[in-house]
Length: 313
Image 1 (cartoon, rainbow, N blue to C red):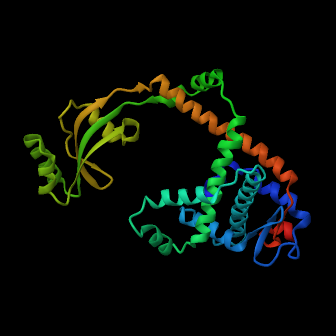
Image 2: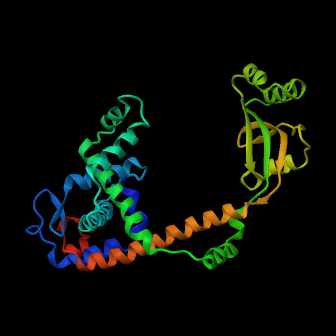
């Protein structure tokens, strides 16, 4: 869940550390804490849990000490932003309630078989309380967006139309081709399977006869296919087959099923997508503005160990 604020916090890291430099001191931040946000601590355990989530999401940890420090600093920046958001909701008396947190937990558990959620936490070595805290922060950010930022944002018809005129190509679905692909490491196998299908028109039966061969139906944009396959398919009519081709050390043959012409999405769908894009962009801008102001008013103290080396010399 650590990525919730990534798109919102491009300015946060430098702002936080600029604000906290005068107060960065081991005597200021208590042992076991890495930062204080208006007196509320962010603990080392919270930071480690958020960093572990980053690794589980596919962002591998760095081996270089300074790079690792930067990773932790970036994660801490998000935790600070999340804490500021939670404090703002509390100030407005619209914090996430225990009932809302429990309801969201139950909803998430529905995605797992009985006992599966707890098993997942155990296998991933995720502390339940840390998980609930992360969920609380995510729900807080969602409520902050809908209750505080969204009412500040409006989108005009002119903005939608101008975006459409500048990005019309993004809403044009290119030509797609629908075909059957036989692929194997053996040329004769591909050739035989292709011939049998053309006679019998029974794809499942052909697949069962050749267990070591891959048979699949493909629907793909032509510009995503290898040039050799585009050229081979362009000469075919429906149900005609290519000769056996060799590509990347594999033999394959294609049978064309159909071609779908390029088309433009319906205007209603286009405008709906544009409104969503513009809305997200404006909410991000509104968040950056709010965050800049909140940081200017906040009392933030960061452990000296989280600062870049050049700031600790």
